[in-house]
Structure formats: structure tokens, C-alpha cells
Amino acid sequence: MKKSMLAVALPALAVCSVAHAQSSVTLYGLIDEGLNFTSNANGHHGYQMVSGDTVGSRWGIRGSEDLGGGLSAVFRLENGFNINNGALGQGGAEFGRQAYVGLSSNQYGTLTMGTQYDPTVDMWSGFTSAGNLIGDLSAHPYDNDNADWDYRIHNSVKYVSPTIAGFTGEAMYGFSNEAGGFANNRMYSAAGSYKLGPISAAVAYMKINAGGATSTGALSSSTSVFTAQSQQNIDAGLSYTFTNNAVVSLAYSHVDVYNPTSNAYFSTQPEAGSQNSWKFDNYEINGQYFFKPDFWLAAAYTFTQAHIATTTGNFSPKWNQVSLMLDYDISKRTSVYVQGAYQHADGDTGLEFDNASIIGSAGTSSSGNQMVYRVAMLHRF
Image (cartoon, rainbow, N blue to C red; front, side, top):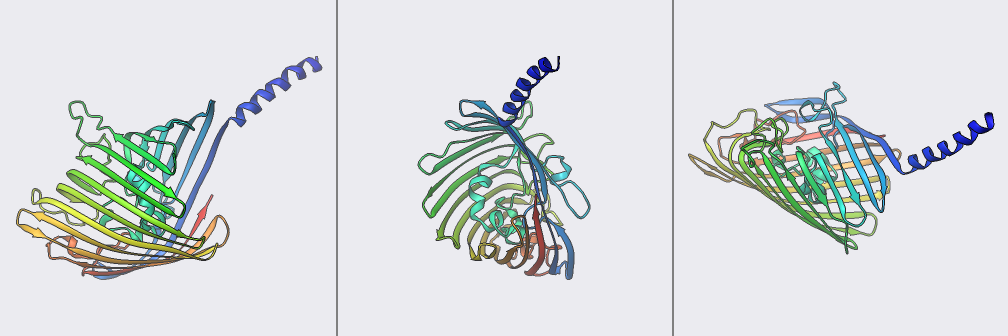
């Protein structure tokens, strides 16, 4: 009897072993925590403990199942949170950072559905310091181009091509989910990247119609930066890697916001119907230098020119911003770092465009100048 039971059990265990080998599920995350000092926040010094300035604190689950023939089922559920009070990020959504499922083929690419990053984030933001190195303290004013990952796209379908001769393409469509309002709060985007030796380049485009205007749709009202009739982003990036210890990148973005009604970073919104358009051109150069593999310095400079068209006149505010970061990796999972940023705003719009406002600061400056410093640690698991 014992022998017959063993004969049944061993093949069953073998089947379980094979099934396990064909699937994988990984729990992962990181915690970014530090102390910030702001030189001028509403006319006062600001001292804060801030979670997730360089990279958002998060935990997630990702997995895949081998379906055979080079095809796999894939999924990801990713949560954002604030370590200081335990609050959920992204407007309180349980998996507000990412939540998708799809199919991935070695030959044909990957198709996913759910809440996801759009192609401008996936392929272009890595050429900016905000999207790749320093985070909030180097974001362009109001994160107008979403290089700092302010929002994700809900109800979206995304396709990523396989890489062929160094080129990868990506396209996405975010549905409005509104009967009789197909274009109300929808999004579409496309991007392409190319890599040849030490040179990398990318171009990207995104269009949003009435983003955040409805409770269901492509863009959540709780995470969108601008509420407007429409918005489009045009992006380009180029980088060069010098041996193994230095990288220099250039990034450009142009953003058009038509008939805007609010800016998420303003404490006081403009009068309803007073704004015709907000347009931003962002020019950035950034670099990273490794003194040793575990000790590096990053720096970024951005010049932003805006064109503000209102019912009372047109204005052209400007911003100059410099950001620095020095990082030491204590281990493969734990790092400590210091950051600093300075922004000068020059405008005469009568709106908060005239005041410096670094993302990650304790609040908008009462003048055109602001500095923010941060000392922090980051742990990955």
C-alpha cells in the first residue's frame, strides 16, 4: 500500500515542480525617506520629513506564466504609499501606480491592459533627471510634461514591440469609458526609441482630451496636473555613455494645454474662463558621473519658457532650475544621498507662475526664488 501511494505521489510532485518552474511571482518594493529644508515656502522656512521624493515609495507583485512557444501571460499590481503616515498614494487607490495583465511574445511584442505608464514615460522620461536620477527636485515646473511620473493612464491598452536592430516602438490608447462621450477623458500616445552602442535616442507624443473631467476615463482627476479641454506633449531625448563612468543626456519637451481651468500645484486657481492656453517648452541637460560603482554624482539644468494666453493678455514667464544629487550605495539594496535644488522664476502673469515652486518643497515661494535641500536614504526589497 505504501509503495502504491508513493508511486502516485512522485509523478504528482514532478508535475507540480514543472508547473512551478514555468511560472514566477515576485514581491518587490522600495522605501525612500528623508528630511527636506525649503528656503521660502509662503514666506517661511520649511522643515519636513518627506517620503518618496527621489522615487515613490512602493510595493508590488509581478508575475509571468510560460504558455509555450515563446508566449507568456504577465501581470503587475503596484501600490504607492507614504511611509510617514501609511496613507495610500495616487489619490488613495490600492494599486494606483500600476495594475495590468496581458500577453508577452518573444516574436511579436507585449500587449497589456489596465492602469499603466504611457509611452512618453516609458521611453522618454528616462532622458530627464526627474524620470531617471534626481526625482522631484529636478522636475520641470509643475511637472508639466509628466517626466516626474505624476499620473498614469487608466482603462488603457498598450502595445510594446520587440526590439529590432536597436529600435523599439510603443503605442497606447486610454478609453473614456463614457457612453456617448467617446472622446471625453481619453488619451492616445506613441513613442519610439533607438540604441546604437553608446548612443540612445527617443521621440514621443501624447494627446489627452478633457483629462480628469469624469470620474471614469483615462486620467484620474485626483492625479492629473492640468484640468483642461485638451493637452498634447511632444518629447525628444538623446544620451551618450562615456565608457562605464559617465552619462550625459539632453531632453526637450513641448506641452500645449488648451482652455485650462486648474493647475494641481496652484494653491489659488485662476478665475473660471480666464485662461485660453498654457504652453511650455522645457530644455534640459543632465549628467551622471561614477567616482566608483557605488558612489556617484548627478546634476541637471533646465530652462523653461512658457506662453500664457489669457482673456486680458499674453505673458511669457521663464524658469531656470539647477539640481544636484550625491549618492552612496551602502549595499546593493540600501543607499544614502543628499540633494539640492535652486529655482528662479521670472514672470508677470498675476498667477502663481510668477513664484518659484520646486516640486518636493514645503510650498510655493513668496518670491521668484526658492531652494530645497534633502538628506535621505533609500532601501529596496
